[in-house]
Image (cartoon, rainbow, N blue to C red; front, side):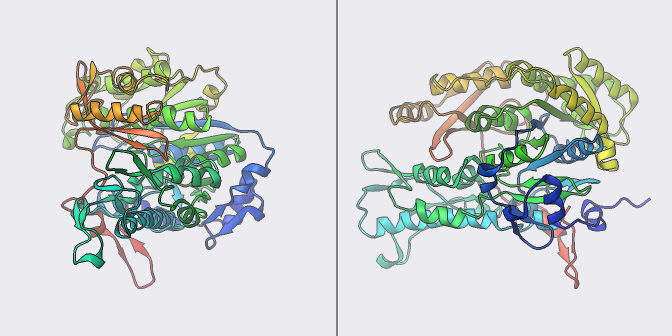
Length: 557
């Protein structure tokens, strides 16, 4: 039997006109801005003009990712469709994919199998142009910064203390570190410079976390771009760039409405890893979705130690959101990988390896239930070669923590395969919860770092390099000490060493750099070799992508 690729499945389905999807969600046509027949932006005025109560918010997260795959987005989409199958009014809200990863390391990012958001090709390519607007705003600020220096440098900016980078939405290691302004006096002031991938830009984080266009402008204005010779921060507001940047971003701030294969309304808006492995959609999209659905399914990036922690400690705190339930996605294959099984052997039953890998799942579950005080269900994204004995072992270990397991078969069955998970989620949403963050804001930077490392990662301690200690002291003196922490850490381990799989203990995490994202409203703590401009792999995903004479795209996952 021929197994269709994700893009072939997506292309075989007949989409509904987006006006019909909007009507299903209860969006009046006056709030729609059409991008063809199957995409629309929803005007954020809806938030101020609706009387609707907020629905229940469900966060989908996952175990520590492996090359075996987990299927978090697929599960999110399938769960939203599964809730519809139960007669519930559901909406799904996801982040937008980025051209960089899509053409570089991973192919498409719109779900998989029979649990996808469509039009899949558009979503994975230029979509509605949000990222281009973000790149334009980012690079306008870079141009105005360099022009200020060229035109006399009235603010006294030290060119060796510029923190703002240019950006481009493509994985391109050649641009990580460059020298620009060469060619003579009229070509600018020579200096070291560099590029981030667009989604790693603070502008993306600001867009994701802004609650209104006024808030967007204020956040842009606060962004620190450089320091003066006497170490005073220089902001986008000081350069008088915030107004023009907001003008470029005013439409990008409006969430994008599309649909799942089964016609469930879907908002796709905001950063893949805007906030360094945050990977969740914008506050604006979440808030609008909550007004339109009784159940809103959303997700955060990578494992629960990264995306979910940032979602709960940063986004929920800033937006005043309170999740009703959390889904932790796992696969038997990935857990066996954590138990030391090579990728080629993951299809063979191995209860011993599964038992060795299970602590990874259990730690994520415990974090959700004890560190954050939220009800939780484990969704096992089922593969054909998973055995009953393996599934029973996972269920046994999770039940010991008071957490149920639901098989998710949404890849092959769509919403029908997500009904069991949906039923458990509905049950959990009615449970009382004791949601709280992992740390308080009024503690020191070092104490907040230590709380994340010891409570969430279960490490022994955090160590700051002399440089990071100096930065923490300076940032505190500059009034940024009360900001939440956005940890930049490998996604492949609880520790900062990607080779430590499973549930490592007694490790320390080394913070080598702390920088402020004053517009976003958090401090970024860099650990290990985290890159904000990835490079292309030996075989880029782009090599498989093609288009025929009729404009039909292939190879996009």
